[in-house]
Length: 272
Image (cartoon, rainbow, N blue to C red; front, side):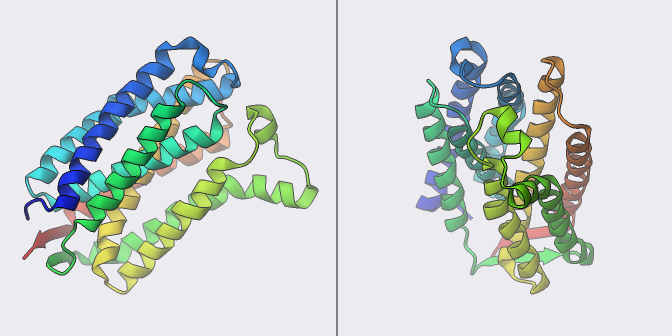
């Protein structure tokens, strides 16, 4: 397969994301004043996510870059999913937090991961790409995309419905001291449409659907693991999450992890 300029640069940017993620995690965990304007719940959530990013996200990025350079297309799609996750994460950091000392690092993390995602997709040889998917993958992947969409709807519809029915801010905004439903916005404008598009493409047996599916799966699994990290830190900091949300993310993480493994076992990718 080799490296064209898009993928070569994409790999370098991905390693840059790993470096910036380490710096962000250490800054957030060791520089006490950084979250002095945030609520205890917000601080616990970001520290939980930082731990997951540092312990799981950084090693996974380095490993998938290594395998991608050895011409593993499956690793390449996993790397794209990780970069999409980091782009989503660092965008939310800049939207949610009040201006703090991490601003430039959060901005660098978002920019690097966004362009690492785009370049690694752009560098795929779609014309020469050959994909053989098992009947199970063709049947179940659209259903799992629908499951991810369902999670988004179940989690965020109550807050949105409350606002439009009462005209008042949901408790989440008041308790966490934010100005809008930022994560709802990201999930409904990015995750949900991409899951629908992926399901539609696979129904049509389009190659891009099989490229996007692992991207969505890896990204969704990364988010679920990050949220479980948040929930753990929130519990020990005395700001526990609602039991309903905990159950949604635990079930979601288990289902998505199981199907991600099944997906990769049931698909072959090569470039002729």
